[in-house]
Image 1 (tube, rainbow, N blue to C red):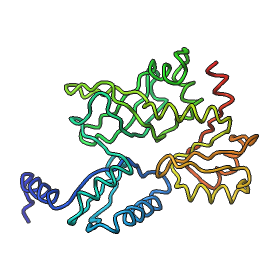
Image 2: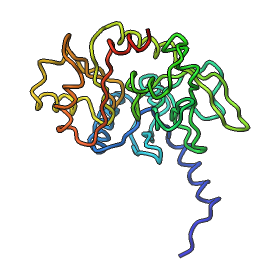
Image 3: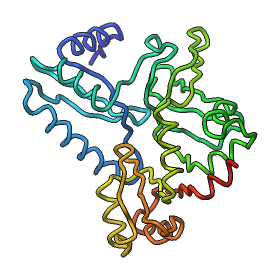
Image 4: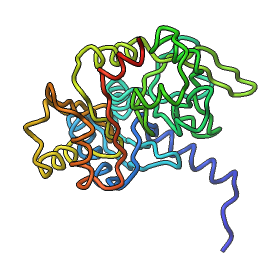
Length: 273
């Protein structure tokens, strides 16, 4: 049987895109709770677009773990705009410009010593936004000269930590993208530090599963709340005088292979001063 040519496949893909709204939302699905997370986001999106004349044609995970949706129907474009408003948008390289705010996930934070890379969903050229070390020092440490590894350790910046960025510069020839943390993201870190409450950063678990693990460990009474940072990223807020490292050792066995890190305001204040 003769296989269709590349041109015919591209034509079919173009026709499909005309019939349906195909786009990414800035949420990744990864790790041991992948299937649970996919069911959860599918259910949530179906509820959110239930009053529109639109149908979810497919929901998939692309090669970089981002969620890709295909919607069809009379209100497909309206549904896409609504979901982009709620979850945020993923932009193409040519859409990036200085001052644009976008969302991404931290990747391999300890691999380099001169800055960190954030995956912002640029599928076709696999390029990531880069936050240089000098900018992290400026935004998080008031220009105090600390190593990148110590910044990552103190601010609990583990793999897939969700970050909101502001684009500083885009080179369309080299595809290099330089960014910094958004004002909102910096404010979140400052709020956490000033609260004096330990937090447990979890990357790879739904909020529901994180709560179940806390209950099973017998530490629900030590937890104030669970802040949703993303679909699979949570910040568990400990009560005053409850130490996050001790809680991590207890709930870790109920969330196997799920990375966790303690965000300790007292230690960070000492680190910055």
